[in-house]
Image 1 (cartoon, rainbow, N blue to C red):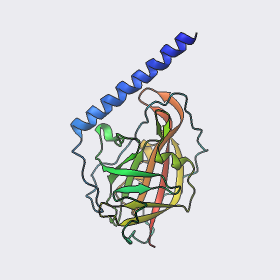
Image 2 (tube, rainbow, N blue to C red):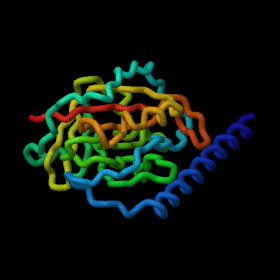
Image 3 (cartoon, helix red, strand yellow):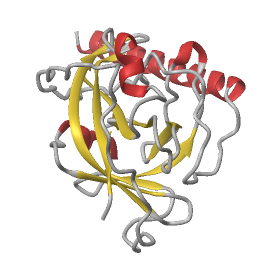
Length: 240
């Protein structure tokens, strides 16, 4: 029985490794080269319909809280809000070209465009976060940041999204070291089947400017799905 379980475990790990390798090859062939991180960017025309899948984690499972109800949508009116404005250069504690979460987790930003079938690209390293969509100084649209929850038994900075609370601050330091601050306003736990129907609402390039952070979690399903849920954190720009 022990040998059978061991063989099954290594089989799953091998399958996940092959899938990850294929995903990275596809991304390398079909996506443009990585751009330098900066405060401004031209958002892509597409809207991501699928959040990134997480690689297999043997023996790791993070229970997720119950989904919070989505706020009512009003497509006729858009709330007014202050634009996030650059403040002083980032202190030595936060490096340029990074995103910092409320508990201090920090990931290096890597600019990417959407992969095939409008799938958000996954970062190639646990300490990275891919960035798609609006620039930090954009008057509208979502700046989408995606990061791994964990990999090979190690937790990534974006694992903090499972503990974040409304009202906490997220700071993005652009390539020049200027900081752009956002305050968490909405926290969602979505089954991956729910993400496509809410992609325009969450990741679209219209409506007020916002930062949208995404990671995976919940029960591991394997295959193309990976973890069964996505944690989505929406944060509004604030000054000071």
